[in-house]
Image (cartoon, rainbow, N blue to C red; front, side, top):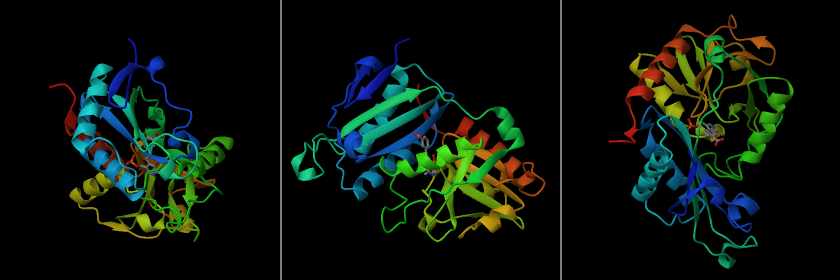
Length: 293
Ligand code: PXG
């Protein structure tokens, strides 16, 4: 079946969806995006993703030319056009088209692209046995330079470099530190540690994205009676944690069992992590905006 892409409100076969070479997203990373997932006919936390997209755009003074409810409908329409039930949905929005940095001199009609893909996931064995992670030398930019709450295209060059550091040593992910040397997050996932029965995750002021899976994991933990706290996390805290895991739309909830050649506790996924993974799978299977009524 042909793959369809929604470009500025119109569905095109993927090979016919063309962007200007002067699109500000391409030229300068001047845009925002969301990575969303559908599970068996339902889009997980669609409204939260759309809301975050518009907050990111607002913070960068990018005017998205359609309303959030129209964006929501366009996302669902695109998944339907591709006859998908479970997939990864990518929404990218750029400021507009024109050469030169100055937004005054470009056509500030936002470019909006919505596409769907089959996901390549971590293999099940990594959920069962956990992920080996390394600390990257590439830092997250300080919040005074670019607020980590903004899911912008341009921000990701550092994350890509950090991911390449992980690839170089065969690790599944890389942790990124902030300028103070505390752990901010992984390249495309948030970090959690468990210590003394308590769940701890770095606050966004430490350089973490306000992850939607992060929020789901916090809600699940609280509902299971596990206390949750946002606090700075050091590498020492990770090395000596009872359990650790990462959360993200792509990875879902995945145990982190080794960091920088050190086992975390016994080097196996811990019981609280397993409980949260199980509950998260129930959430993704039962919640979400229906794609096909
Ligand atoms: N931190 C960063 C830097 C991220 O990019 C997360 C944490 C997890 O957030 P969510 O809301 O997904 O729980 C992310 C998510 C992509 C892609 O297109 C990127 C993400 C998610 C899905 C797809 O590469 N980043």
